Image (cartoon, rainbow, N blue to C red; front, side, top):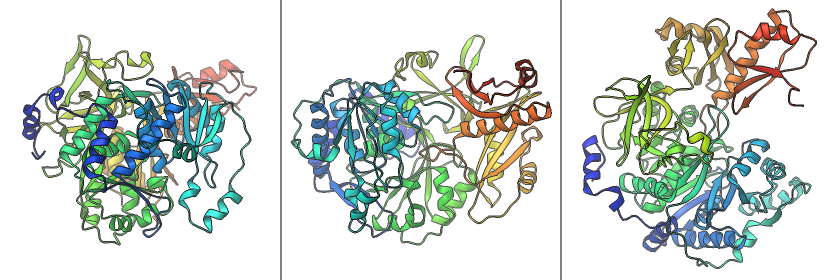
Length: 629
């Protein structure tokens, strides 16, 4: 049955209850079924370099199953049992996929963004209680090994570090040069260090243990942290299989080739693309360790799609913006759809992509806390530009507003908080930190997403912003999306981000940052004038606009607004201190778990009371830089 209308969703659900779908009893059973059906077909391809003719490694489904078995056996041999955690701090590569699936079979996998700082990686290793870490061996032009070594010093439960050497993907003479250029790291932590591939080859290709059929937490995924420090969400086997079932039922077939330049530490890549491929038999292509961030990936992207005869591309708005700065220079006639997630797609960018690439974009919505998928614009049905489609089968969405009498469901087209219930939501146990699960659910089963949105009369879901992103100017709520959409209509703007900057009178004032299209020439004043013309609400006109060489982004390419907020706090506080005749200046802004963003001032001769009088009118707290010491 096609998934074209809301009625189709109801018909799919009417076929049988979710509990009677008869899915595989474990992740490994799902992989084994696909390997039995499509053993000789390609499962995953990875190429280290981005050229359309560069070498690539491809594993068939039979080979992938055997290698995953070896990885699971390896982790068991290192003492990993159910409930024990294997952390993965790797860029994309074949070994990263083997780690994810092998660790989820033997115990629980915890993929960690290798772009995080050592203290954040260490905090996640402690939070998850990881025993084993799979990471990168020291390699030129990357500092992952160095950061992991520092992180392990502060993660006492880690007993084994397994290193992956990317040099095996290179051909001579580059392969000969790496040992000469490889940074040498001093031994600074307590854990045993072993070679991942050497240990892997010692393991049998059949499982040496019986995988659990319990519906347990098979994965811990940390959030992207776009509103603060990352939190760790628990993913049950049933939620992971649900995401795979959706992809296999509604999207992919075994003949499809899926381009996925997104990192495997993110749910969009692993829980949606990889799980859907495992359930359907589709072939996934991973271009370069850094995906979209890899050298030459954007320049070679369309040629890579031609090489692999891609039928689906997986993307995010910032990547689409970058692709629109390159012409389509290859035959992409095999491509049917582009699926975009992670953030709403600006309308102008949506139209620009469809005109240039000749492809239809299907926007979807998901979140780490719900394992991932929630809604999608139907590939073969009516797509409402700007919406994220309608909820997927077995997913319920409520729009809720908080009142003195408790949460109340909003009527059609009224904005409130998006709340979700589906097989990927784990009521009461969404986060590993129990404190974070308090007040997280409505009616005991609907997850409060923190996203604001509305459901229209046709059942389509529209995201209007983040509850924490709303700019509150003197009690007046301003949607940052309105500012961003207006700026995106300017042809020189590639990415736009709006936040609330501190204000002593109004609490917050709108502030905007933009990243320009390559080679574009425009002034900040010209962009401000453009914004005033295209933003209909005077209160939403930016009071400050700044052009940055690059807008800060997360590993998946989502705009990272905490960095922009920190930038704005430092600028506003420094200006206030200077105007007040004080010599203190902001030395940095930290993200405190309980207080939020806190400005830290360099110690000066200024009296604390004078600083307090100057900054006391702002909502964000301050402290001296040496307060802890």
